[in-house]
View (cartoon, rainbow, N blue to C red):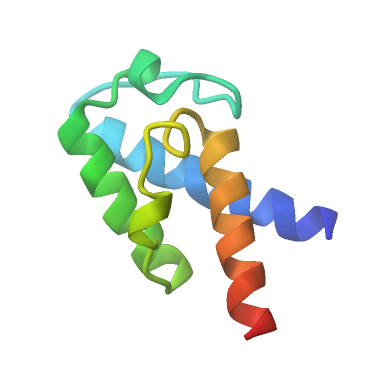
Length: 90
């Protein structure tokens, strides 16, 4: 299970860094860093949401599109892991 969590985290960090690079920004993206503090705008958050959906091949339920879930890599990772577990359980 640990490697699954690490894989999810690394893929999310890569998405965040990709968006930052498009904006010509560089930041140390740690799991607990607030995404707005590393430089993501509200438009970047939309791109991140779409990127997560494409990367993990699922649609984020409307109820999960909350500021709390998009606060940091950690919060996003928890939401993605939950959605992936629900998908495999179905």
